[in-house]
Length: 440
Image 1 (cartoon, rainbow, N blue to C red):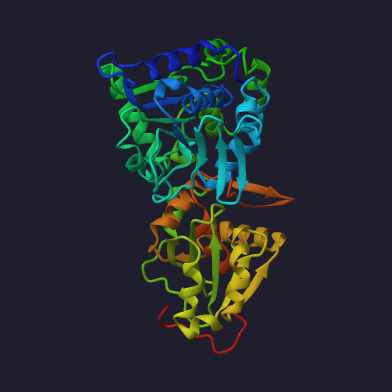
Image 2 (cartoon, rainbow, N blue to C red):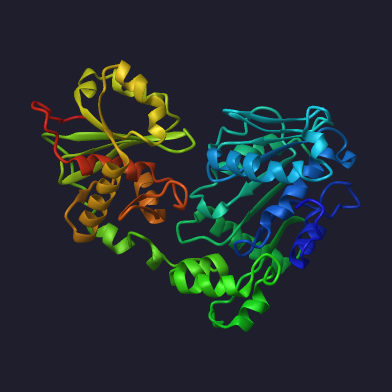
């Protein structure tokens, strides 16, 4: 909470990250990264930094802050539903109220907070173009472990280049082998910490060394900086009993999860790859959209082979993609009717696309069928989509009754290509006569 004393680890990060270079009068560190266990107080450290940017006169004028999470939907949920109430409940709450000249923006695509003095926090999406337009003084990258590339960073850096006091703050619990972006930041950060140049990049990490006994409470007390504050030993003991070894090590040891903790192991996935796989004959297609409405995938299957035909940024291209080839509108197209693709279903039907709307239980059945087919080697997957490979590497599941679905929220990658492939394969060969596909 704003106004609550910082824990020792938080105070260290704040003291170093906000150092001012006496020669320039600007922050000594243009980039700041820290990695710490879950529930250790990451938000309660960074939120005051964001607010300070927006209201402090030391920055010489109104400042723009950009807050990002793995998707725009998750970012707006965290900012509006979790962080805004903290500000409102503090002595600074008046500054974001109408009486104080501020405003909490909740309009679709325009989420954020305006402060009375002109500073503002904007929620940005996760595409490279999200930060374009205007300048940016502080960029925040939350939950970096779920990023497969540097698109969030690249969306913000161009908007910061003309701002001499600009800073980029990134933070996360450690990720997996699929956390390519975070893993690179960790490697570079550790080297910067060893060099200790006093400028440029500041990096902080709290983690349990892999050669320590992860089950020893004495080890927990040595390496968990929030133990006894936001985390209690009893909760750690319970987590150890209920979580997988890899996920416990990642979440509470802040250790990188090994590849053998993948939901679909790499060696299993590799065995079903077949360059000659090509759905043909009576083919079912599927379309899926990610939760941020910023990418979509089309896949096809004949019940034996699966191919992700295309994955592209945005969603509106789907309409033109089906319109440009008349035969595509005759294909049966499976969709998760309750998923993010629902935003374009009416438009797809208006241009003549024949939709197979799948309910929640049907989607869960398709996920189970796809998983079992991969595990048993009973499906052939055309290795033509890097996005599909990334989705499989980072996918996790969400229980639905006694079944499961691919999780859009907790996976470390965008599962959209995998969901499209799953829906197409789950439907099996099209029952419609005359559907013979040679060229997509």
